[in-house]
Length: 161
Image (cartoon, rainbow, N blue to C red; front, side, top):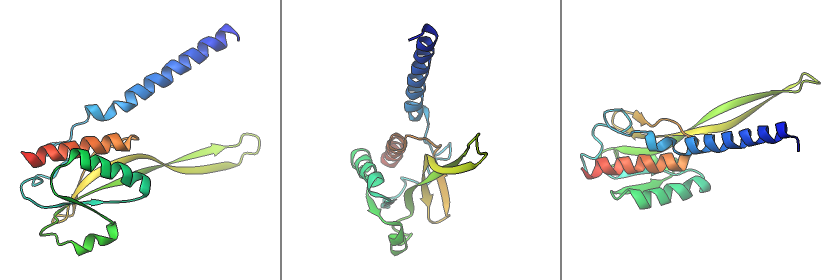
């Protein structure tokens, strides 16, 4: 292999590992507080049961594990369609997430044809106060399980104070 190509591959490999290291530590530097707006001001002041919205099977695996290991208050995992059955007076707060979508356009240089691809690029998590209909949102991250775990830990810290 030519030295120029070998050096270029080495630089690319190092850059990829550097990017992965920075990206994976992203949630460690995030803060989740009432003051910063990620946690409702009244969260943890009552003994309400937190409703947790489930989604697809892969997501629910992390959801159940992260709540079981990191949140020790009362919570109930439900489908979004069941939400109306739970009175706001006993179930004021809801934990859920939204996906941020991105669109990538690829142009074939020989034909000039373009193709759009839409994909989920990152997640945000939030606690919604059902009495005010306000969402208290995290920053986004492509590492949804790490972000979810960090946010749940922060909710637990506020809850147990």
